[in-house]
Image 1: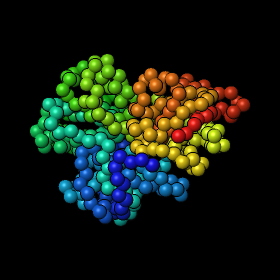
Image 2 (image 1 turned 120 degrees about the vertical axis):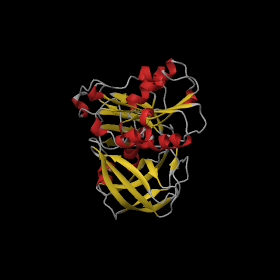
Image 3 (image 1 turned 30 degrees about the horizontal axis):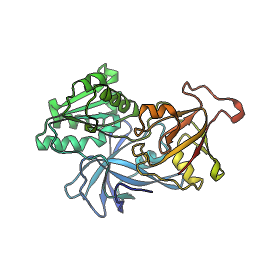
Image 4 (image 1 turned 90 degrees about the vertical axis):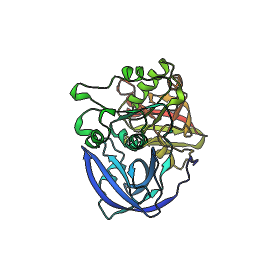
Length: 336
């Protein structure tokens, strides 16, 4: 495994758990070896799923200046792979293994202006950035979009802290976000930071390119589990290694290959770095690209895929494949 941060694992004690929105739990931890959490940082956490230890990543919402207490927030998703269920079962006094804060989504201080865009649970990666920009007296707009108000974590606190700098878009109240209008309001000097579902991220990236805005000024973090289609079970084959295994709807292709004994390269597990790329040799079905690493053209070729988040499916329309292979998509790959 390659790493962009040095992982220092430690024990942490759960100090507080509280619901902050529908199916969203705020969890405050007391690390054994505190370290200050900078805006945009995250923790890797070991969870227990079906008796197995698995790693998950959660954005740091806030922390004390000395890092002695750090808060994350976890959405228990309907299609959870089991990690969020484990996290929601934690109670004060419980302990778990976490890393010190890791940084893949840094906030650059000194830009003329900022737009911070949070979609749903993606707000967890944005909250601390907004707090720092307010403290610095920077020019910023915080945009928070979600399907419904009850699903919006920290909304009252954000209203109180950011006032007119906060813009809220709620689908079921008829105020859904217009990506075209948002990107159309950005100038060449503005830096836009975003975290949210893949559909939102993809729409912003397309609009950004169409306006020919400076691409380094568009910065983002994903949470890697929101695709264009519902996940379904599929089969992955690695002919050179004589491996064939099923990937359940609740597991990633990377995890299934690791379980089958295949040594894999990876880093982010969120479809951002491209290190887990595999070559697609044959495909019976279609690919649901869930990464933000490839360009649109690269995704359309279906020649490679990021196996940490992307999946195979029977067809984009959801029609079942022929019964000879049990209605499952099959992807045949070569690994590095």
